[in-house]
Length: 257
Ligand code: SAM
Image (cartoon, rainbow, N blue to C red; front, side, top):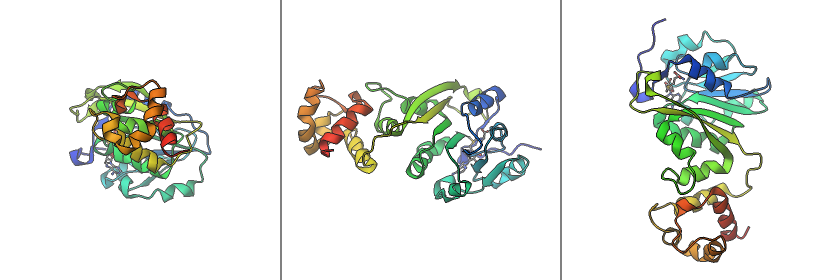
């Protein structure tokens, strides 16, 4: 069958390297009671490896031109809709034990896809192919250039690891950025704190990255100032110096938890 002509507006860069496709699929181990979710299967390059696994596969694809390719694959249900506007209620029908997400996602909606997932269900593991710069941000450590609000937010739920780089030439059409495979493994014990309040607190701390916490947090800073000192931080400390654990600790002081 003739390949579908890629639409830039839908983030269509098809991965052509079979070794990498197989490597991505092999990064999850499922049982028959689990569910595998793929966002943007395209012509099924990755899907053909996912359907060989032991559990059902559900995919969301916005482009109906992919239907003739995906129809050929067994053990696969495709919802031809925008993933971001789907309320994910369809997932319940699968009555699964654990949810795994594996996808070469459209880069223009990387953060909204992760956000949409997390706000609905926390997958046991996600393996995503994303733009390299974005992968570095997700997996960044404190005091590094790439570290920011979203890194801390993701660290609330997951252990994050870069599993390998993928050069632009492995895609068709060739994008103007390199990519990286990132795995997000759900933490065994996720802190039981109000995530909306925590998100607001961390966002505020990073409001102006170059400014000190004192400047960004204003009144809230007065409540945590002595604790920061006990933790060994100076009055000029910036948000980028604090680890996820530091943020949780300070949040608990602020909210008297
Ligand atoms: N998985 C295929 C591969 O690896 O070659 C295709 C990956 S391509 C980067 C992204 C895919 O996501 C395309 O098939 C595109 O049509 C689909 N897509 C884009 N926006 C989408 C959305 N909002 N919801 C569901 N699928 C979407």
